[in-house]
Image (cartoon, rainbow, N blue to C red):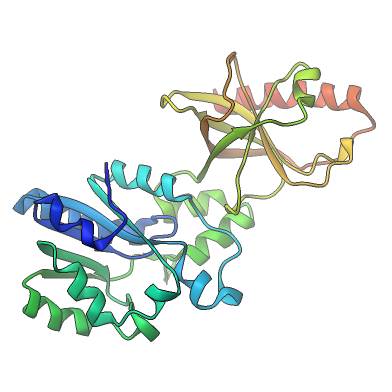
Length: 306
């Protein structure tokens, strides 16, 4: 996967570019329909299939009070999903106050200094200062700059368009099957494994404490999950998500016990794929009761993932 962070870096790639443009929070089926147009164009005409996106989410700069409190994936996770879709290039442009002031026409002119042959967008995509850029502007720009425009209609689910907002709500509510149907995959989060209190190790069930930042998480409780390590190996696992009330915890954490695993995962990324919620989080009388429940949870996870 090629990664470029500035528009001015694109001409040096020396190949025709077929780009999907958008924020793409979650890369759901609607986003994938846009990306697929760029990938198909590159396959048919030659050149690089790319995704041009923005980091952080523009709404966090333009109207922070209206920004979602959580996102559906990190930038690195987005790049991994893009690669699985056939994308060869990702351009995560840093979105700041200066970019928010950029006129739509200036943005397209700077972009088209590179050999852009295809631009794919959702048909309602808006861009540029005060969101003045739209598909009508891109149609005019296509004739002037010589690229082909692919304006893609929304993908629908249960009578409404698929959106990142709908998916976040479904995950928040624990409707992961519904989220899967909109994402086209099971929902997962990726984060580095960081040091924890090592309580699980004391109880005989060592866990990987996964840092999740501001990612959207499902309801607290014990989950049967798959954990995918940095080599791509997938392990069945039991995960506890919550504040650990038995030990008077206050911070929400995601702890993952990989079944039949031994090794060191510290500082490595771990992807956690949520499969089935086994139970809600609750407070136990003490560590002995907690240890007995963890043993039962691990067995339940093993059976659920068999």
